Image 1: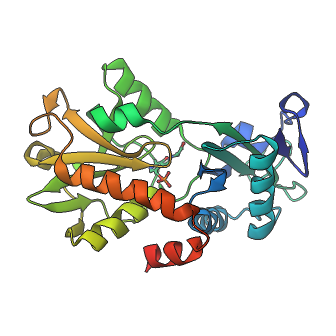
Image 2: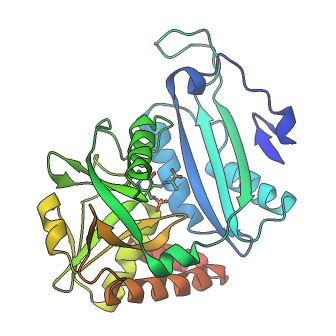
Length: 291
Ligand code: PDD
């Protein structure tokens, strides 16, 4: 079952207007949530980001945070999802194609969920990445439907026989096609600061929280493509990737070419955070993760 506009329906009944501005302009926002044991992981943080994205492109959400939360929970129940993802998007609505915001259009919510297993094999083995210039716009902090830069980047990686890209702006590493990026150097974690050049990943936030708990120093500072050669470890973070090691960059192994000890430690801790999220007292965890 899907949710579309204002009700639940089977996928084949979802009738998107050809005038939908998501279709014409990528004029909308989205979120991807992880479901563990039938529950949304870090729901509150995702809803906060959704609201930030909506405000950032001046779309009025058609429902409150609480209403959307209950729609998504119902979808999970109706589709019997235990381990999976929920996708949701809100477009500015349907109107004849002109650039200005249309006066009469009503924002359209669409949401569905899928059973998706944790990527245990790649989390164990790691992935290969290639570097590439980041050609996206300058509001990568907003989770908008305009993903052409990300799509081209991912395809570039696959065309090169790699799994993903490490994007950089004139030599400064930002993030990957659908995940955030970290390196470990001399025992310290390095990742791009959460500004307008990267998505403020929920998994990134949880990872930073776990690093603080372990006393692993974190530098949220820009670093250069050349620094990748000096990295002891590298990994990506994302809703579906969780914490996945990067073991080759531009054809060369990262250190010994196997997942490193700090990455593994964070992966173990992340697994515990998932269990934690299943406990009743989830709010407390989320709150302390942000503090
Ligand atoms: N991608 N950076 C980019 C560009 C992303 O698209 C994503 C998420 C992330 C990681 O964010 P989070 O930890 O909140 O998932 C970073 C989603 C999963 C997607 O587009 O499918």
